Length: 127
Image (cartoon, rainbow, N blue to C red; front, side, top):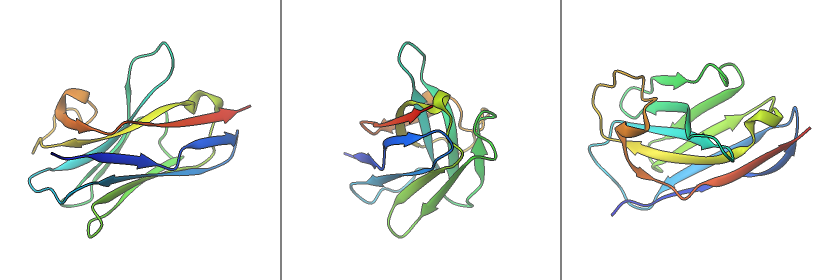
């Protein structure tokens, strides 16, 4: 059983930064990408960013491109989300997830391409 544990959420003022981390509880094989999604109250879960585990290719939602950076530490089995220039509309619960899809037609933006999810970490941006 794979467990994904997010950390790093919190309260920050608009324009500030936060760094989220997602660590897998056990070494896993055969997964191809890790992604971050978020869900604000009353809204559907939406894609934020993803990274291919093998070659490090990255994918971003237009709403965060240029502000957020996804990265990984393969040795630690950890993926990070550096969030800069935060806006109030970035307020949400952020989830990391694991994908075992080798070739994604959605740029890993579809939640259906992920099989394991973390419990989420709250990010609140005050204006």
